[in-house]
Amino acid sequence: MNPVTVKVANWLPSLALVGLILWLARLQQPVLAVALVLVVEGYAAWRTAGRSWAGQVAASQRWLLSLSMAVLIVLSPGFGGQAVLAAAFLAGRVWLVPRRGEERSGLILAAVNQLAALSAIFLAAGVWRVPTGLVVILTWATSWLVATGLLARYRDPAAPALAAAWALVAAQCAWVFSLWLVNYIVLDGLLVVPQPAVVLTAIAYCLAGIYVSHRQGSLSRSRLVEYLMIGLVVLVVVALGTKWNGLI
Image (cartoon, rainbow, N blue to C red; front, top):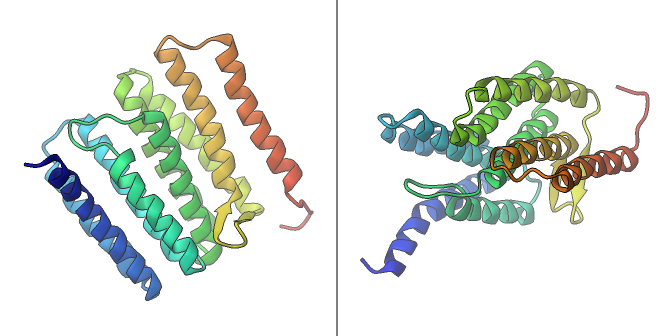
């Protein structure tokens, strides 16, 4: 088969899925959009039921990204933001998420998945009035899933404990952030980015970067300082850029 034909064939299912989600979002049918993702990605996961645990974890990263992006597209306030998110969703499915026999940067995929999942959770909390308890549970579950997907490739015996520890930290932070839920309006209202998603993703990226560098034997003092400075800068920007008050 012609390589161009193969590339187009790989694009078409993702393009069709993203197009349908965008169409349902314009029709204001969030339940149908989420149901579509669950059916499509659920069927894809069912097809891989006989694969290894590592394969199942890799498949879970795909449906988590799809579900998170579908929720974000539905919750986006205008067509411009929905179109931008749909384009990002398509790019993520085609280039970022690995298929069978392919490899992608685990750290980048984990960061994108963490940001998308937390953004979807906290936007839903603000728009749909999701209870704080459910926000904490969803944050724990998605953070555990993302961490497990990253750590699985290193076959570390401590991976389950590390994933559970990060999920617990993220869940505790989610409860605190739920008391002061702040959203950043980006590009004149084109996109809405929840503050908790930015902060937790930055912390997760720094911690994961340190872990990955350590496992690869490339963790130097300069790289450690670099990751710590990234986390510190993000926290300072958030603290100075937020209008804090005493009301909850």
